[in-house]
Length: 540
Ligand SMILES: [Zn+2]
Image (cartoon, rainbow, N blue to C red; front, top):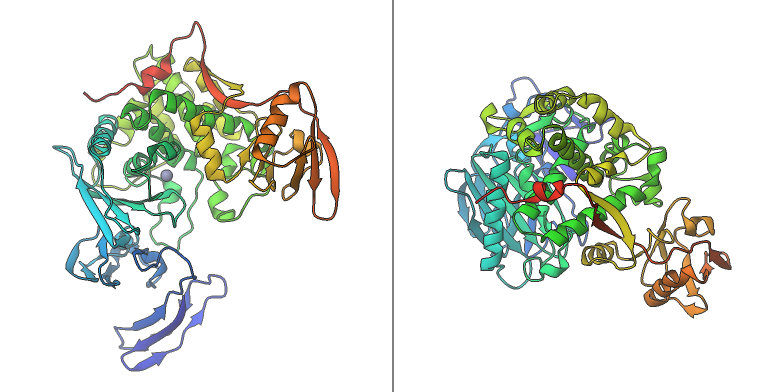
């Protein structure tokens, strides 16, 4: 933000920045003045995809100043936006007046505005996917490429099944109408941002055209929709604030994000967005990732919920040791275990479906409704009277991956063999490197540069660190094939690498002899397949 100038009528008022809060400005408003004007600019970095000729993401929090110290729900605000000609804006805000390139939104409150971005694109196609008897749900495809995006009949049918399966779990939607803003663009990394009445969902440009390359992202749309219940309608008490400048406490993200991620996996399977095998492969990848996080030795799952506040947008040099937002992936396993405990303990009468139907029920009346850890434990206790607080605390503070036990309760186990799954390969492609973490313990890019090394893994013990360049493997120049061949043959011969670590070159051997290792799930004989029970469709 630059260039702020404040006027009371024609009189310029000087401001002074707060010494501690760099986003706050103090100014003295003269007696009798009830109207001030603030002019400023938001400086976009070159190449920032939020402002392009064919796509504009209007995220209001970057674009406004407001009187501090008042409930955001009591500050009325009216926004308008002028766009490059030919762009069409979509938002959950009510557009009062719209002409080519210009939109004025109805008066709303500051909290609503901040939670309702407008995305404008040259090519927009909207689909009404709301179910009969449910609030409206509109999915808009916004594209910055040369053509208008479209849902095929198959994709539209998939999306409708996804809606039916979601409502079968959560019941009535807590919103009046919902705008799913699906931005199909290669200018953003895949990901989503949830809002009360909308969601921003960033997906690759070919998401609907090239399904085989999307195996990792197939539950992103349903994940963001589930947040309408888990996260926006029911909010962990530390994450609700009266004003946008009040710090939030993220200690419940393993519930807010972890359970939402769990439902993403489950609902993608129930609605056929992922096949049964693709779901097993995704869960195998989740479980292997959890197992690889040896930073748990010092950093329990609970502490990873602080990541967004102090690690955001910083690269982790030792990702398994430093741990990042593990409450997503480990959350999937944590909630899978809870679901399986409910099934076992209730003679297959209850599962997490029953928690979701009760705890996130729109019958609670207009939200948001905050909840505490104890509220969540009490809701679980009503389904199965055990000490949930002790159980969850153990999972959150443990130094061993206890959550993997949920797979066994589901009748499945994590195993490794020499064949990568399609899901694994796609995840690897998104990492931009060759993922041999589960064998020699590192990730290497196409040029042989080591992206990360597993702390105390085989490569680590051989003396390899992030940033080193693998020049040769067993006497051959570096290539993916040479790397994988050497690992596969490690059962019989050592993995010998020539490494360039900046100041020096060295020849070293990795002490490893277990061959290629890629994660899979395998059925355990003699145990009921409760995973199949969980993943079965709930809607006719
Ligand atoms: Zn989320």
